[in-house]
Every structure is written in C-alpha cells, then in structure tokens.
Image 1 (tube, rainbow, N blue to C red):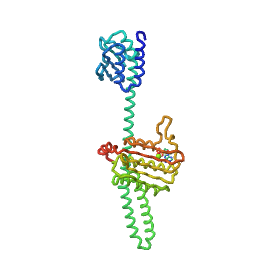
Image 2: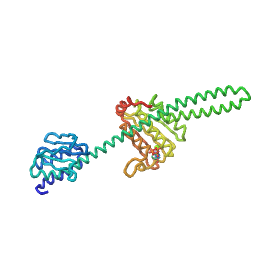
Image 3: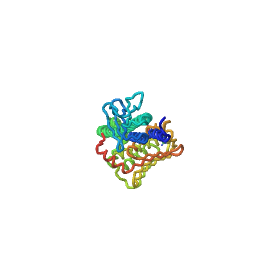
Image 4: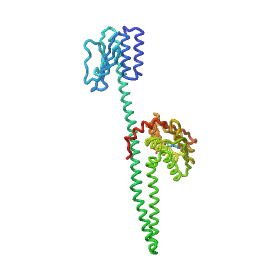
Amino acid sequence: MDGFSQSEIQQIAGFVRKIAKAPNVEAVISEAFIILKGIADIDRVRIVYSPSPSKWTEWKADKHKIEVRPHEEWPPPEKKSVSVPFDPENNHCGFISTNNKGDKVLPSLEIIAPEVWSGLLLQSALARVQRAAVSETELVRATLRARDEERGHIARELHDDLGQSLASLKLTLKWAEDLARPHLRMETIAKQLEAARQDVGVMLDKIRDLSHTLYPRVLDTLGLVPAMKELAHQVARHSPITVECNTRGRPCSLGKDIDIALYRCCQEAINNAIRHAEASNLVIRIEFARNEVRVAVEDDGKGFDPRNLYDSNSRMMSSGFWTIRQRMADLGAAFRLSTAEGRGTVVEMMVPYSSRKIHGRKNKTTHRG
Ligand SMILES: Nc1ncnc2c1ncn2[C@@H]1O[C@H](COP(=O)(O)OP(=O)(O)OP(=O)(O)O)[C@@H](O)[C@H]1O
Ligand SMILES: [Mg+2]
C-alpha cells in the first residue's frame, strides 16, 4: 500500500468492512464514491457491472446523485479515465473508473474495485433470495387457497348431489316399505326395506358430517361463532372428550378469508388434541377484543416438547402447525403455541381487525369453487 497514509489505509479498511454489510447497491456505490473522493480528490465515479453476461448495469455517482442505468451491451470505459476491472481474471464482470488520473487514483481503485464487485454480487444474490422467498410465500398462499376452494367444491357435491340422491332413495324405500307392510307375506320384505332405509339414514348423517368438515356452510351463512359452536358439538358427539366453546365480546364480521383461516386452524388444533393429547377436556375460546379477535384451543392432555417441531436448521417440519403458522402469517396475524410435556396444550391465534381491509379487498376477486 505504498503511497497511502495511515489514515487513508484506515479509511479503505473501514470501507471494506462496511461494504460487506451495505444494505443496497446504491449504498455500495456511495461508499465507493466517498472513499475515492477522500483519498484521490476525484469528483466522479463510474461503475459498470453485470450480474449476468446478457445484462449490464451502469451506475454513475457524482456530488449530487447516483444514476442507475441498464446497458444492453458492454460499454467501453471512457477514453481519458483511469479504470480497473472488478475481477482481473475476467474483466467482463465490470469496471470502476474515474476521470481523475492523480497518482493515488489507480492504486485506490485497485483496492476498492474487488470490494465493490463482491458487494454488488452479494446484493444481487440477496435480491435473488428475497425474490425466491416472496414467490415461495405466494405459492404457499395459492396452495392453501386452492385447497380451501377444492374442499368447498367437494363439500357441495357431497351435500347437494350425493346427499340429495340418498335422501330420495330413503323416501322410495319408505314408500315401498309402507306398501308391503299390510300384506302378511310381504312382512319380511318390509323389514328388509326398513333396514335398508336405516342404513341410508346413517349414510346421510355421515355425508352431512363429512361435507361439514370439508366446508362448513354455516360459516358463510351465520359466521365464525356459530360455525365453531357447531364444530365443538360435532367433536363432542364423536369423541369421549368434553368440548366447550366460549365467546367473549361482541362478535363482528371478519370476512370469509379470515373466518375460513381461523376455522381451519381450530380444526387442526382440535384434531391434534383428539389424535395426540389423550385429553379429557377441550375448550375453544373466541374473544372479540378491542383491536383483534383472539381464538384459543386448549386441552388438558399430555402436552409435548415444542422443540420437536423444528429440524436442526430451526425450520418447522411438522405440517399441521406449519400450515397454522402460514395461514396466520398470510393474515398478518400472530400464532402462539404454549405447551410442555405433561402440561396440556394451548394454541392461540390473534388476528388484528386491520387484516380485514387487506383480505376484504381480496375477497372481491376470490370465489370458492
Ligand atoms: N394437543 C397436542 N397434544 C399433544 N401433542 C401434540 C398436540 N398437538 C400436536 N402434538 C404433537 O406435535 C406433533 C406435530 O403436530 P402437527 O399437527 O404439526 O402434525 P401431525 O398432527 O403429526 O400431522 P398432520 O397434522 O400433518 O396430520 C404431533 O405429531 C404431536 O406429536
Ligand atoms: Mg396435526
């Protein structure tokens, strides 16, 4: 580093340290500009680089502004300028140049150029990661939405189509049974018909329950609270667990997307309690507070160590809780899991009323199939 004073060396070192943490490309360029200006008294820096061979981008920094300009092809360095490539092995990656030819300019450019290059590369890699994360979230959101729509569709088919056919078969059986019963010899046939009618009745109940599990129509017609009470009732009917559903505050309409998300998350938490908890009591609490609606599903079962839900990279592996978390994140809502071995489990969801605005707008373009 011949020719540089101690303070200049410190300035360059500080720049190199900062560049790794620079929040964006413009910050990288401004840092480069400031350091070059300080050391070599230059008033203009030009930086051209390409994150991919087909796309060039040029930045120009001067006292007042930093220009960002895309380039179709490799632009030549300016004739009178001093310039160094970012990467001496492959100078097509880009270059940094200035119009000042002072004796300190070239050595300082040589130090700064590779740092700018790695800063820029880091930034474009970060931007790619961010884009990938956004599209992953969108994919998850679309998948959950498609699943809800598909469930709604199957529920309607079961209820309207299959349900109606079975209901009319039940009536036909009753009619045949009534006709056969007064004739003595037909009594056996009447008994068979009666048994068949009862079987059809059981099938109808099962279809109604299944249709309700897939998509509770009451959610559309009466809203979240009656749908949750109905769910609690259904669970209590089919399992030995005591189920309670309590509400607090004045219920208000949350919109279909929020209703369905909360309903699905409660369904998952309840299913978990039935399948894994060995609980005796299950309480569903819905509270319409001032700024948010809070829904909690609490069981008095065996609980578990929540660390088991994550892999060694702290990624959530289990699909039920992952979906709850994703649905809540999608609403801008919070999700909390409180559990420990031997201490029961509480799954809580807190949805701010402000989520309604965003999802209300989406609802207008969303229709369930
Ligand atoms: N209420 C609960 N009581 C005790 N253990 C629970 C409870 N809820 C979840 N668990 C434990 O947490 C694990 C993860 O739950 P999660 O819902 O994410 O997945 P799953 O129920 O195993 O599978 P899936 O929901 O995809 O069918 C469960 O396997 C179980 O060990
Ligand atoms: Mg589960």
